Each structure stands twice: as C-alpha cells, then as structure tokens.
Length: 336
Ligand code: SF4
Ligand code: SF4
Ligand code: SF4
Image (cartoon, rainbow, N blue to C red; front, top):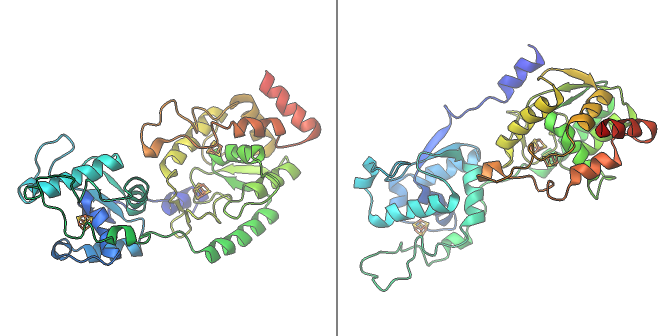
C-alpha cells in the first residue's frame, strides 16, 4: 500500500462508530460523580457507564442533546425535563459556546468545562429568594464538583520518552524527511523562539531543523496530517495507534496544512529538496497571518496560535534555517 493510502486509513474518523449522546449538564454531573456525589438520576441516565466509556476512551465523540434544537424549537426532551434541567443545559451550552446537536470529543468538551465552568453557581445553585419555586440540586453545595480530579489524561510520559528516542533515531538515520506542511512553518517559529538551542521533549522540531541545516538537499516528503509526520511521535497529543492529533488545535492544523500547501504550490505526496522548500517559504510566506492567525477568532476551534502576536515566525526567518551564503540567498528571495 502507498504511504499516502496508509495515512488515509491511519487518520480515519471513528465518529460514525464511536459516539455517545449526553445532556450538556451531565458533563458537569460526571465531575460530581467522580468527586463522590451520588443521586438517583445518575442511574437513570447511566452516568457511571458514560464516565467509564469516557475514561477508557477520552476521544469518544459526544453529541449534546437538549430540550430545544439549535433553532430553539422544542424537542421531545422538553416534555420530560423540569425547568431547572432545561436551564442547566442551556447554561452549560452558553458557557461552552455550543448549541444543541453539536458533537465534540469528550476530551475537548471536558477541557472547555475545566476552563470555563469553575463553579456551579448560577447553574445548579440559585441566588434567589424564591427558593420554593426554583429547586437547587441537592449535590450542588457539597463540594463534589470542586473535589473531582481530571477525567481525561495525557499520554503516559514514559511512552512519550520512548517515542522521542526512537523517532529521533529515525530522523538521524533518514535520507528523507516526512513532514506535514505547516510543520515547515513551525520549524521557522522554533528557530525564532527564545529556546532554539535545546531539543524539546514533546516534538522533533529541533531535530528536523538540525537535519535540514546540515543537509540542505535532503528530500522532504509532504504528508497531509500528523499520521506520518516526523515531528509528532513524542507529542502528548499524538495517538500513535490511530495516527491522530488530539490537541485542541487538531482541526485548525488541518486548515494550516492546506493553506501552507496553497501558498507553497504543493500537493500531498510531493517530494522536494529542503533547500527548495525553504526558498518557497522565504518567497511566499513572510508572515503566518492568514495561516495560523485570524482577523477574528470565531470559535475555540479557530483561535490564533499564541506565537503569532509575538512575531516568532518573522524572527525565525530573520535568524535563518541555514547560515552564511545560503541564508543570504534566502533573505534575497524574500526581498524580491
Ligand atoms: S450539582 Fe449540578 S452538576 Fe452536580 S450532580 Fe447536581 S446537577 Fe449535576
Ligand atoms: S504560528 Fe504557531 S502554528 Fe503557526 S507556524 Fe508558528 S508555531 Fe506553528
Ligand atoms: S500538537 Fe498535534 S500536530 Fe502538533 S506536534 Fe503534537 S501531535 Fe503533532
């Protein structure tokens, strides 16, 4: 099988086979449950089972269902839920920037919960004198939510270390590099960073830079996605068994790959000498704006990389992938 075809299989979506349905408020209830809280409704909604599914596979897809559809019309759930339950679901959706019917991985949803919902105030408790009209959840003030630990986990550090060693060995021996296109630009950002003389534990940008610097004519095979990219193996967000990236930038990185290929005149599977690719970068990508940074961050999936405002990429271009005459040649290309 061609490497390109293998990558397709490796990076395949499992959403059609691996999705559970949940009420948005139950994302919070999972935390109460994990923190030791118990309530009858948790059995009714099989929350222990759902917690187990998520703990076993943090990247299971979760479709959020509520008493209203995304246009505010009533769904059958409306007739089964209390007003408190309906409000809780909408509170959670509003705080997470989502609407009924949205699907995200459990990892992404729970990370948004951690970031945006530090307390249950106003969601499960009410600051109201009409206590007899709006009923609080009995678990709300018991501290179970606050007590709960993380439900999702990063890759075990020992696995990352093992993959760092083997992938660095592979880069060292390689007579060809395999890179996803936007990692060519990340290599430039790495060069422009304050710590560009030390290898990083969780990616191989340093090693790739050294290899290119010392072998300007080494061929680079362009691979769309993380599955075969030589930068990804030691990363905390890399899932080697599926060849996918589970970092929050997973989707926008796909667009970065395509935008980079567009600017550099590349297609997946192209193989060019490093020197030629770097020349194209100097000629056509003076800034990562429009690839890694947007005029407006429209959603958590579409946020600007934190390296953009600091102009790390521009600094990297100035410092140079190469040195001496070859670097001068690149700088001259950017002036044309
Ligand atoms: S306090 Fe809120 S989050 Fe916790 S179990 Fe009750 S409804 Fe769920
Ligand atoms: S701005 Fe961020 S994503 Fe873009 S090339 Fe630099 S480090 Fe990579
Ligand atoms: S965040 Fe994703 S794309 Fe970036 S190095 Fe890690 S696995 Fe690769």
